[in-house]
Length: 305
Image 1: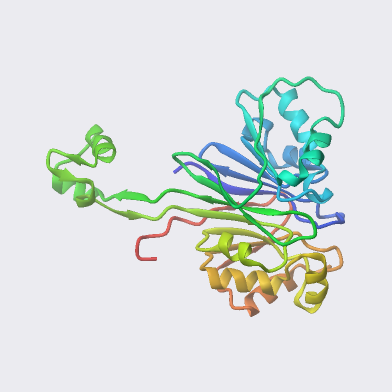
Image 2: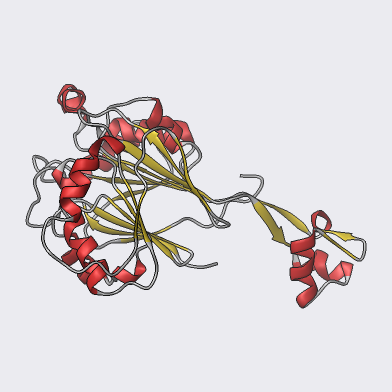
């Protein structure tokens, strides 16, 4: 299977620290790259993480607060400077069109790469390919905000023993997969169901229906946990989640790997976020994100999982 992993560029919330850059996350998925919420310093963090402008196919902004979007100007200019050989698509809340335009044309540069501008105005599917469906769901924040979800189509896993028993080998395996039947052998006879992988990116938001819809059944969930549970009132006032709330969502949604991020500078010890997510009932794999960390998607589920 092609590389599918998350590259963490930055993990701070509004104020960066000596060890945490502003937001920035790249999802590598079968040869495509999705850059989520490029805050200040994203271009520099990409260099440090070994991510090139050529790796980027989509820019996905959840909302137009500076820690999630001020890096757009540099990234768009870098895409053009490096003459990326493919079109790049930008998704962002439609209500923030003026902010996107200002960032896109913040300074003079030569536009050399087609930038497809596809604002998000409502819940729904943004793109559909053979490898994934990208969709958005509205979140609850003081400014309009959307989360993103990537879902691979369900498929079939070929079983070598069944193929051998049916006398199917070599190029005939591919023909059977494409046609569904070959010389009386059905695809279902020599394979098992293969659930598609699911990824979601949930940033600045209070608890709302969109959070649950995005998280449902995810193999990898990247979610903000700006505050600890002791500051739940402050989190709600400013439109954020606590670590315990993030853990409860992951536990209730069947998430396999939970990535906590977007931490307030007020908390010096990141271990407290993991502890509160566990206390909320999450028992799966858990990562408290660090800058420049790489997080692979979990192995595929089996049909029985």
